[in-house]
Image: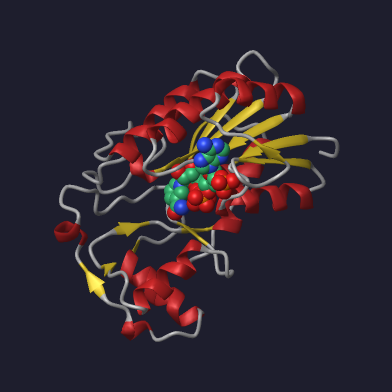
Length: 261
Ligand SMILES: NC(=O)c1ccc[n+]([C@@H]2O[C@H](COP(=O)([O-])OP(=O)(O)OC[C@H]3O[C@@H](n4cnc5c(N)ncnc54)[C@H](OP(=O)(O)O)[C@@H]3O)[C@@H](O)[C@H]2O)c1
């Protein structure tokens, strides 16, 4: 799709930068927007600045990957501002969401599962989903821990922090982590194929935070046995422990095979 313009909010972040790079590699015009990085500096909590950005860029598609875990204003209100800016335009809108919208009370969650968040972050992501669904032709992509192997990856820092004794890795906290490049491929494939609705894009395996840390430590040439362990149930009582996205329908639909980590 040469001549196709995609505007990525949160392009300074881990997923946003991978999306921008991949879109450019596909020959799309990728416009990066972020608070402190990218071509367009915009604060998504500023409703009119977001509207001005979308009106000026006139993108064919918008992806919102911007968030701050502790901020309702950014994660929920900001997402609503991006959705609102897309409303009444021809643009496709993709809101990146999270398995944090689920409590973990069910053994696994398919795309039709309704959010039952138990944390403020999960509630903010669920609110962002609702805002996104108001936009015709919108897509919500729920994902899980986003892992990369490069030096910028937050999970590289996680392993380093754990090995330095600054963090314990929970053995009772399970998710379906996905490689950032596989997630980016899936998001852009959904844009390309004009797939609407709710999609689940997690990786194929459920891993504990500790097991993920062990695998990454091996990959980074560090000692996996030196990683300190802990229990999330004790450290953060009441927070979701075992949240497994069932992504088979989405991966079949998009013809994806996210790698095992
Ligand atoms: N990380 C995970 O494991 C994980 C798991 C499940 C779902 N998700 C979802 O995946 C998405 C991307 O996550 P990520 O880990 O790639 O995020 P990230 O690396 O933390 O990047 C977040 C981005 O949001 C931008 N941002 C924050 N506040 C902003 C504001 N007020 N206005 C404009 N931009 C703002 C930041 O901009 P600057 O850098 O320019 O300041 C940054 O580029 C999010 O929707 C998140 O909920 C993440």
